[in-house]
Image (tube, rainbow, N blue to C red):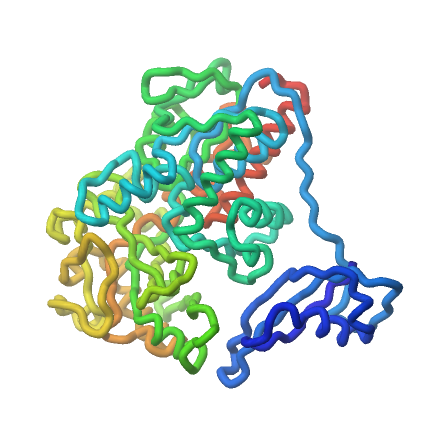
Length: 524
């Protein structure tokens, strides 16, 4: 097969026009292309009067082709093969977010019949609980935006773009597509699924794991480990049952604070990890479209952005998890705390765009003492937000212009906040520490110079965004095992990923480590 890059596709042209464009670049007749597939598609919006897609196509050509063109090369389709094994006992996977889900999928496809422990509930039950909470009902501390089938990523934009170039990523994206995600996730430069579709996708993956001999137990929280002679011997479930195992993949997510505490008390080694906190910033989507496209988007996708700024005092800020046409989401998992996140459906059709606006924090910034001091700081800010918001899970909010002027907001301007169950207008300087507000005050005007309208005085800041990543890293060695043999810290919660795709890839890697352990003849 031949890979043909840098094929220009007009924003109103159909993908079906690509074979003819590829043939033209190859200087061959179109009928010589026997088969083809779209490998990459990205929108070039650098020139507002020349918006177009840039595509790469892999094509099978009849006959030989000799082309001296740097955009043409041989193409070897990525392959990922999972060996079949026979295990004497069943590995346990803790957590059914992206890392745990893909670890379990690999193990199931290998014939290892994994047992998955998930503290939350299945996706339909979880969805009902989340919607009830957003409508003003009670928070279920074990079944919410953070815990349950699919993990925290299920209630996000379902973004699959990542900085990782791990070859396993091709297989991960193919699995998402095979289980109901749009085929475009395999080739879009910025693939996304959307929460409404992802809810079904994660159930489909679970059904395959079960069909292959695996098991998924909901409402099953890891509360401790059984360890014998320095090796994992079992998982303590809900403080009652010890499930025997000799390999345990620990994919608990970044919000399993009680599990962090229990593992630390048992001597599992971990260290503070840099993470970021800040606010959600919300604009009208049409303003973002105008800034990025120079016009109303029409048939183009809702525009997004990814911004960062390094400030004169050496600090920095950046946007993260940008949700075009989305909502600011209530993401609390502990009673008496307020947490924000972002979410979009597949159509990205909401009137607002939102993104996390974050400040990177290092261990020396964390108040207090101990390995979990960053986690404790998160919790303190979330509880202060709960009180400032009125004690009813309403989130503190402020217009950007008022924030910069240090005056409390009294209501919205042209941007209506999307957070439910509601917001309380206030001054966020009463909530966030100066280490964060000082940076944000510099960053908002600076980012307005990079994206027109980012510093709109009516933009809404909703706080706090505290769960961008894990505040700790659970230590593991080159073989991906912790000091406790047979324990494999995995994914975002363990400090080794940052997003759905990278967490899924790390889950695949940890599953491979378990399979290598089996292959080496050490019994499971």
